[in-house]
Length: 160
Image 1 (cartoon, rainbow, N blue to C red):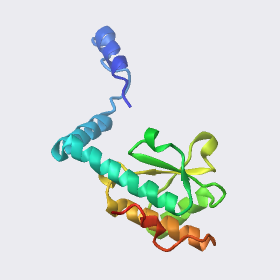
Image 2 (spheres, helix red, strand yellow):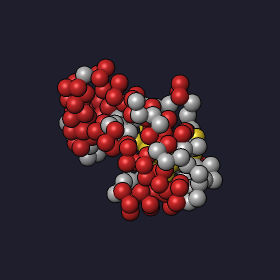
Image 3 (tube, rainbow, N blue to C red):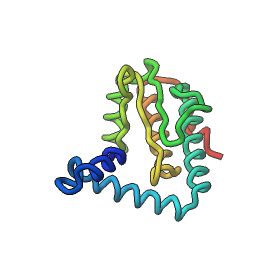
């Protein structure tokens, strides 16, 4: 991402020689413009409401399957859920399963959690039930295939 203070410094001190500290991240500015336009079109409150609802659906579904999420709800980000594997599944194997069976990419945890968690993004256009429901169904299916007693449909516990 662009450090705008860095860009300002170079613009003020070296604009006559080289106006940018490197190749401008044009794609970042285009993405920022498009995402801002999308938020303004939907409305800020409606955007946040949609993101909160989808986060709730994901987390309630995960908990209903007997798994835990990393962050306490009061501190959790509405755009991502980190699910702890707690020795119930191997994150890499689950990620491979989701890619093969559902065409979905599931991120692995970071740092010390790389082999202990998965990261599920539910943001922007993926913050909708059509995007997260197949993920939840896939997680339930995977856990059941691995022999865990998960009630059929538990993954959809968060749906109203």
